Structure formats: structure tokens, C-alpha cells
Length: 116
Image 1 (tube, rainbow, N blue to C red):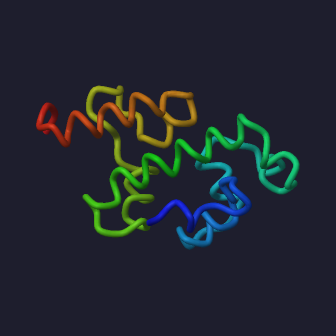
Image 2: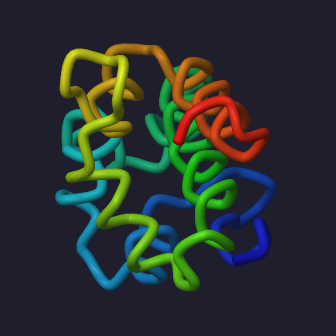
């Protein structure tokens, strides 16, 4: 999905992201490893830490969406599929731990044929 679908006023908008994934903002906050208060107030949503976590979530989903065909299936993969080589952790757990770069590197390696 295009990044414009996830943004509003130049910022990642958790409500738009949640709507596109057919979920609610509270569930999206938990998935991104954020407290629900962090996405309920506009002033908090604009904080760099919140925007960074939302951006990382969107980057991972956009990177795997072509593989799965839809953003909904990509979101399900993100939340539930254990990644080989990461002690059974999912992409969601890694992003929550601040390791989004590891997830993106893993996806790139799979795309390059390094992991199968």
C-alpha cells in the first residue's frame, strides 16, 4: 500500500494504519509495542519515538506485502510467524524490541536467496 494511505499531515497516522489493516488503534498500538495512550493524543503521536515505531511497522509491512499479496496477510505474518534464526521470535516481537533493522535485513536476505 502506498505510504500516503498511512499518513496525515506528513506524519504516520495510527488510525489510518489501523483502518487499512481492519483493526483498531489499541490493537495497532500493542502490535507496535506502544501504549494505547501514545496514539490517542495527537501531541503524543507526533513524538519522534512514536513516529519511528509506526514507520518501522509500515516499512516491514510494505516490504513483505508483495510476497503475501495483501496488507492484511502481511500483517498476520508480522504478528504470528516465527522467524528462523531469531529464537522463534516474530517480526512483531523484534520490532517491539527495537530490532526492526534485523527484520528488514532478514527480509532482504530471504529475497536475495540467502535464507529459505
